Length: 319
Image 1 (tube, rainbow, N blue to C red):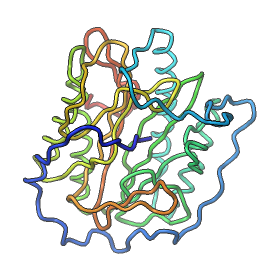
Image 2 (spheres, rainbow, N blue to C red; image 1 turned 120 degrees about the horizontal axis):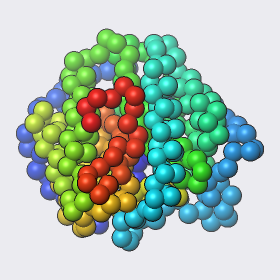
Image 3 (cartoon, rainbow, N blue to C red; image 1 turned 30 degrees about the vertical axis):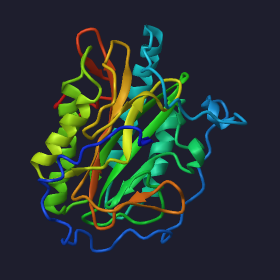
Image 4 (cartoon, rainbow, N blue to C red; image 1 turned 180 degrees about the vertical axis):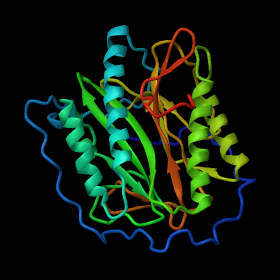
């Protein structure tokens, strides 16, 4: 799950100057309407599966948002590898299950059942009050969409964001899914977003500046005339879902360099054009009306010689 950005760093608007004038195009036959479809209550998690601390704490700690980037030891890295692979397999199963007519609540059921079959906990349930096992962000929903009873229609695209808790640590990844036939511009947006993620991953290594990731994402987006959502960031991950470093996907001056043992997510959201954002009353769903978005996410470990993609899926060849 994304970290909502605290605007303590200065951002440049470079990269938006080249974007194409797409705001007049109607991309969806029906907009996503707040409250139009019901949300089924959270699914039960068997009592034998360990919970994250925020489920039982009187004053939950959801993350650490300041301080030096966390460096994990080898024991913790092994735990993160396992959690990351459970998350990767979960999101792959969900993505392969998508078909026209099913609902995002159906996706939630598939995700939930696979996660608990691995004796893992669906981290979103209870995280800052989130009511479901996965985030599903459809069409103009940028992120943190709550699964509901809306049937998926031809031409829909959506992000499936899976986070799991296993053996004391979290695993976090996301993919895009589509219901053909797709608008070719939206398909291009989805592919460009994945390219931005892959190109950002490829520059990761000891000594590399964290803020270089934002440079790469902005440059890839600008080449195709898209813009980057500046509201949300990637994050370090471990015993808590959100830890330092903060991974900003725009041009930025975030300090510090990567060292072996850092584990963090890179999860850019690209938009068709720059426009306004709105948050629904559920305090999670963020939309940019008639403005398609796309997001992909991986967990990255910095090694002695470069990087390891902890959430790499069996169908991936680009990294």
